[in-house]
Length: 464
Image 1 (spheres, helix red, strand yellow):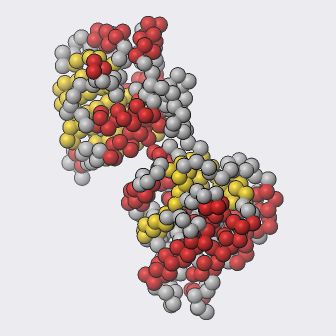
Image 2: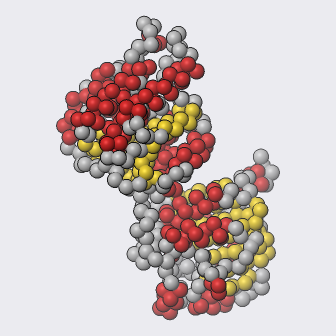
Image 3: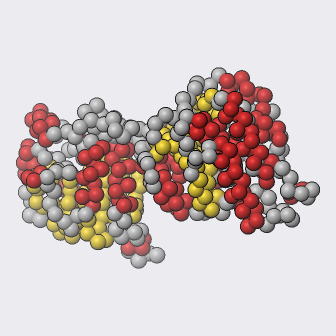
């Protein structure tokens, strides 16, 4: 665990000069909306003030979101109580952003300073609302999760989740790392760091903006409890001609996907192989089906829809837990093999239908108590998928469940990766008022369960 005293001078700034100058360059974001999310009032300036100034100069001002109220920076202060301190810090952040980027919108969420872990769910909801209002976010900038500060870590983790949902670039900015570490510390992410070069004008504006955070760089009074939070030596190291960031590009940029795969693609695939994906013999597939069944929140379901049933292997394992099961696919050969496999289950109907299909390809109408979307979403283009999912969710009954499971590794033929499918589903599910009950992530697959009934399994079964 990292411990440090922010009021101490920390590592001398000059020891960082040479390694920071040697970093690969990160170019200024040129497309889409950029949002800088600060854990506290002043983080936006200390970590990304130069970025804000450069974007403003380029005519692409970023939005700024400040998550906490900054009220805990001077515990025990005889001059400002937490409420008065929070008011001062609001004034300071607005003044600082006005210097750096006058056209930037500033959103203040007002969560309790030091309490982001306890309020994590609400922070996530508030940030999601801010990020999904307005133009799509292309670049999301926040604090670095390895900074040694709990609020910075929690916020970075939340932003990583939201960046994954939104399909945008996540940029993490170290702050306290430069205080407690040295260049040879293994905690410094040299392989991931990139440097944004700053103009002289941007450096000057950042210097002025740092000074605008007076409660952090000037004493409130002569009392020791009112000492500056940021030591002058540490501040000098933050106002240099580069800003360093850890940049995570999205798995797939929306808008560059291929067209939806036609039914003929699957007809040709089943024409070559009876079991093209090895559902019947691969241990990976058996384990995935076991995870799928174990993730269902209820023991039994009434009416169920499985979209993209293929040859019916998962269908056969779902059948004992359903009163009525409708399984669909677009390939005639797959449908025939599924019907043969399920001949002993009279309550199972295997029919032609496609996600996003129309006319003869349309899915059966609801309501369904459960909808299963396993290994099928990535066959659609982003445009077709995001149009199809809201329509699919209209088929979910009150209290109904949606289960989605997808392969994560890239496949050359597929328009989308599995991560993009689950990002799209997350957005559509929340818009439709569904709550996420299960979120399973591993290198090979994603498995999510959403429901109109937000109760956990323990709540559903009377354990709590």
